[in-house]
Image (tube, rainbow, N blue to C red; front, side):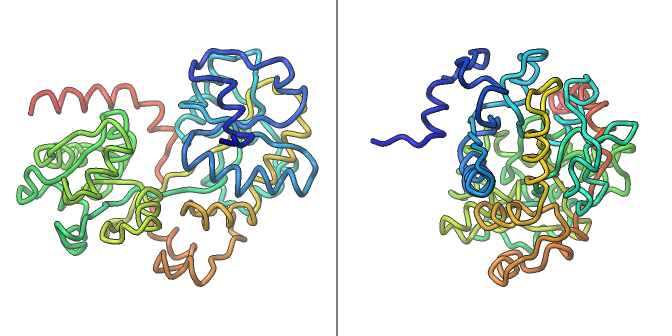
Length: 352
């Protein structure tokens, strides 16, 4: 069997998060090393971003698949071994607040001017702590063999007792960030006022058949019809649909879906800063983001990105129309209060 460059490098690194890279692969001594989640995410970054950039610029980019790039950034603080890495927006906020990210002036990353400022990861003085490559959204996934998409026109439907034992749910760490936020909005509040959302979350929890520990398990529950519906990620449903599982649909309820921006950032003190800035600016541009959409369903953040007829058909709309249906909360506030929110959800679930 012939291993790809990415697979070979991943094998060198092994599964231990604290293993050091060989000196020839240390940041600043050769290619750009980009820390990515594995599986489909790593494949998307290789095909949509890294390989085209290497071909266009002559600067090699290697995708290193890791369970948690944020953990690597923290473990290697002061001695970064990666030039860039991916994280959720909340992870980016937390790393930025802990002064662990390199920051850039907007003129160093001009492609970000075509991305709405509400999607920027930036410091209090306005410097950019990363770029936004794309976003997904958090809606309600429905197995249409078990329920109708019309059954879930509202997020409030998840708390309806008629779904007792027929819903899936994720872990409290994600419930605190995603589910509670959008349920609070559905209840007339927001991330600052979550009392109504907590009531809906409690109602949903009473209907849950299984709290899943992994995305793979959630995929299986939906595909097999073990659950009729559950809050889920648009890109996961996209992947199921592309694999021929067309009876699982993603619903954007009338209150909207939760917009989930991702961030690409560089560790503080990264070497070859100018090289890194050029790579980050490329990531923020429209063309690679369009490729990422075609491969895995991640919605481009760059306003200049255009949806092909095929993409519009699959989405049922264009990018601008889709963005209008999505809710972008204050991720900084959510990140700041996450620990207390998780504790409150744990306490609520324990009392059921």
